[in-house]
Amino acid sequence: MNTAQGSRFLNALAGFGNPVNSYVKIDDGFFREPSAPDGAVRSDHMPIGATYTDWYIGFSLSFFVIVVVVIIVSIILTLAARIADQARTAAAGVDVVRAQTTSLDKGVELVNDCAVRILHMARSLRKVAVGK
Image (cartoon, helix red, strand yellow):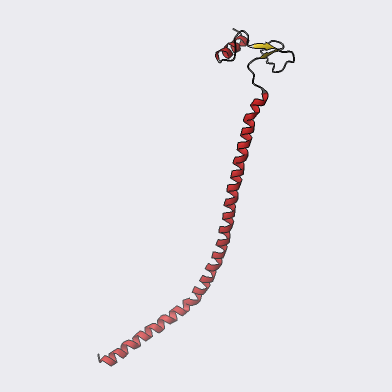
């Protein structure tokens, strides 16, 4: 069995036509296959327009997927810009709070010293008033 007979036999098994008459003769030579006789064409070919449907579906789906990805990325970038603005504001607020607390550092020691003195004076007054 040669390759042309083998391919016709396999086509017949797959349901693509009669193994003996799997080619039809046409004059214009469209869809000519290397294994077909001169001027013969396979009878089981699909029209070319039908194969483009898959491409149109694929391009449409990929277009919509890309659009969805662009929308999601733009939303993420917008939220990131908002977070960056809030972070700048928070950093400025932290600097102000730090400046205010460092100015109280020496004042807290002074307040503690005064409070300790007042406590000692109050104890001594109580001892005098109570008599202990």
